[in-house]
Amino acid sequence: MTKYACMSCGVQYKASNTPPSHCIICQYDDKYSAPETGQAWVKLAQHRNKYNVTWQELEDGLSKISMDTDMGIGQHAHFLQTTNGNYLWDAIPLINDQLIEDINAKGGLKAIAISHPDFYSNIADWATEFNVPVYIHHNDREWFQDDDDNILFWHGDTLRLEDDLTLINCGGHFKGSSVMHWQQGAQGKGSVLAGDTIAPNSNKTAIFRHSYTRDIMLKPDQVKHIGKLMEHYKFDKLYGAFKFNILSNAHNIVQQSVKQDLESR
Image (tube, rainbow, N blue to C red; front, side):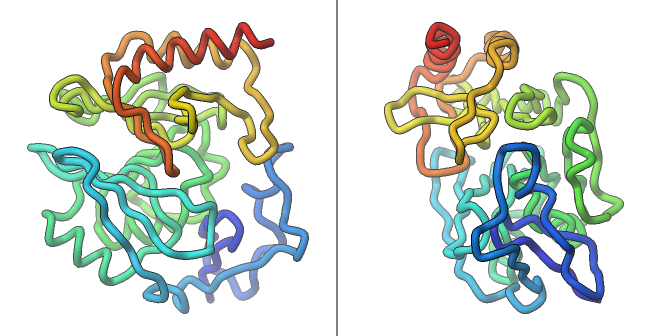
């Protein structure tokens, strides 16, 4: 049997004899729609080493990983090095041999954490390759399309991975959408890896959306909930899944953005 991944979003599905009939991520609610050309599928084994990966250091202990592929939605992953081990935050669409070699040269991985289903990618293969736990919020369990014993579904508002490393379930974009707070980031001022649960914008503000492609806003109570949860965490920087970041005063900017969002209704 063959493992397939959706060409549009990059999410991997269970091995099967034929491609799935549709991608449930692409057709979820009113967030997305299947491409006009029809649903396309990639055989993962044929694409494993097809694309190049680049690394960019963002700050001491934190790097961005990117892949030059037209598969998926173009998100970056983040590689975090702590005194107790290395963490991968979110995933790029494909894993390859060079990336495995690079990560092992940096000490391997202690764990992987995923913000929400858009970035599941081929995370089951990552879990198998590195034999480490992958943390996904329980509220998004229904969207996980493959199997691996290392996938751990966590519950509640927060999960502490280390004394200075916490997953926070903000909800909104998906019910399980989460961010990672790194207390020692930004030289002790704190950093947040946000995926697009909280999305840095081109004008150095943050936005909150049910669907970014269709510009569908979250409900006011969902935005309030994000602001209330994040109010209790100190952070100077906020890193998104795409090209924009907030590199100073991020905590205040997020709170101001929550206020502006609610006042715009």
